[in-house]
Image 1 (cartoon, one colour):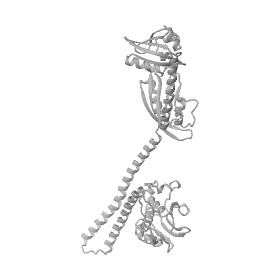
Image 2: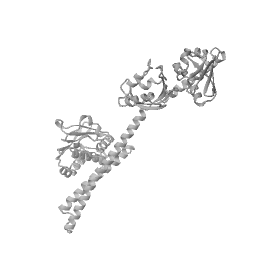
Image 3: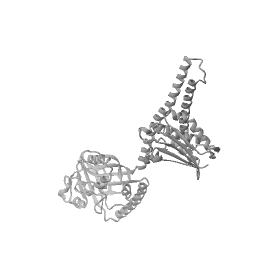
Image 4: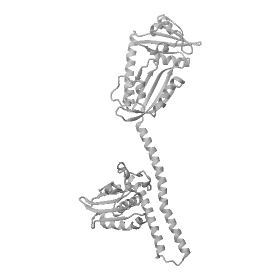
Length: 471
């Protein structure tokens, strides 16, 4: 026979073959009998002949197809199931003119398809790869190495290079998945891991792989596709952080809002006791007056908390409004220092001020009042009972407003972070508050065309919040 003949059992092993089959496969006859063709000739693993014969063994249906044998032989293959066997007849068509034309046309079509496929892979930041476990050969698409941070394709890619690029926390899981290929009958698996690029950055990849096995269940080829999911992972982590911040904020806000409410309730109860003890006690009496002042302070604090919450929502939507008018900034600061004198006394804080008179300019009075009240409240709360000083003076660009405490101070690494939403300096000395006051302060000051920053106090003690404001 000029055709090659093979008889395969139900597991794909060669029962009978002729000499022509051994010649076409390029293997000694004694190596072919009792073996699957792709085991006897490892280069066949994963090729068309292997896949189509594996399908025929499973489906037990006659089929006919073209296949290539290494190095460059084309055969026409006919497969027919006969009882428990599979008969395979292969004809060498390499020299036929019509076969050559078909090969050229097929190559052209596959090249065009490959180009389109590569464009799709590049657009999706994807790549495909294939490892022949018998020969150790690795195929990878054009964009494979780019997903590992290489601008140009490497000469070779190895399993060792892949494992070395993995994050130490992800490597054990990937090693376990690779080991399972040989210790179990797993047919497919998915890996998600971080890989270190040559520039030192970390990127997330996810890879879906399929394992092709022989009749004995031994793995021959692992084939997969992978996708860069760095942006997705960063978004996922950002959302998780946002949920955490939201939950922490809600817990903190409920606690902060309860504090002035509890104070209000206490003062009202004391007023009722005073009324029960002496119904004729006038409203102008010192006892009633002190209770009313405490209620007023609690209401002011509660109002400031609510205003800050509302302003955060406005800022998020770009709707923080300002009403500018001419006014005396010196008079406003003096008034607010006097108004908070009682609050500072109750907090055990010595409050002093040095205010240059008659600093007149255009500003939003209510917003600037909000700025100073937030800074003073921040100093009373976080100054550890140390003195607080308010300084207002003329500068070359307008006015310079400073609120300084002599407390623990703010570490240099945190001096910019404290102006972010919901941020506070770690430590018991700086616990409390919503983490919104300084964020609101910066937004208002910048809305006036000014700047605010924090620096150490005199001799490095405490923290000084400095505002440069044009007038």
